[in-house]
Image 1 (cartoon, rainbow, N blue to C red):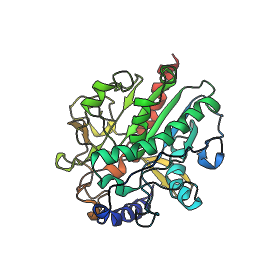
Image 2: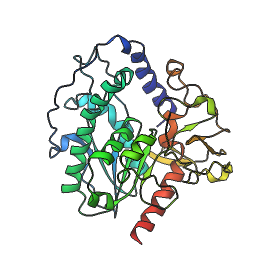
Image 3: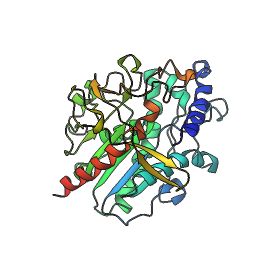
Amino acid sequence: MGKTGLTLFVLLLGSMLFSACRHPQPQPSEPSQIDYADTIYWYSCVDESHAADVFYVYPTVSTISYQDNDSSWFSDITLPEVREEANGNQRFNKMLYGDYNFYAPYYRQMIFEAYSQTADTLAKLAAFAAADVNDAFQYYMAHFNHGRPFFLMGHSQGSQMLIELLKHGMTEEQRSQMVAAYCIGYHVTAEELEAYPEALKPATDSLMQGLIIFNSVTDTTAIGMVSYGDVAGVNPTTWCMSTDTVPAEYHLGIAKYNDNRDSVLIVPCPTRTYLFNHTTVCPDLDPEMVFIPAYEDMFPKGNLHFADSWLYGGNVIQNMDCRLRHYKN
């Protein structure tokens, strides 16, 4: 994702932030079920050329506000323009993970203003969106997977939905086919690990199956709400929980869209890294890298939430290959 596109995306979302607290508490009704047999609800679902799959759930992309969305807290994926909002992100990731079959459903994600609500209300809203992701995953497993190993991949709200899927939606047999769940840009609390010991198993080295979480900042003062309280985060340059400082050469490059080639390339971005309270600190990166003043309360200067999905592109691609080879052996 280019910096111009990222900035526009964040500014659009930031414009909603200031009016969010004025809205009444929502009372979400029982969701009607999306028919994932209809390919209109998939960005990508016909792909069987590789030996393993990626099931990908995109982050918050809706630029619709509560007031402009018929007083709904969810994006309406029956509308082409709403599905189109997700396509830039999904297209980037389909190219990034081009060595795998790419399955990516649309889902009725929460609009950004939902995150300004109380914890109880947010949990109810999240359950609505998570139901779509669960339905899409179950359809994928029944009709598309055909027994292949798979990765779960997500960022931000997408990772939140995948964590709910791990907790409530997957069978033991399905978990045995999962090579890893890269839930980038979110958190898992100690209470969740205790409550779901079988479903949420953090992967603490570069090869084991399990849950992988990471969040990044340029310094420890920039840790924001998304990663606060996380107890599962690893350093994605080493894939472990060691707090030692890791040399810059362990960072294998960022994923960047190349306009001339219409492709995603891995380009150098050397930085030392170390883990602090399960958040990866990158002291050599510019704190202005993805900073938007309108978002400062949630993502202070130096918080790299909007970069996490591509900041370690080279490391993630290499690690997926290593974990898959280990899984097969």
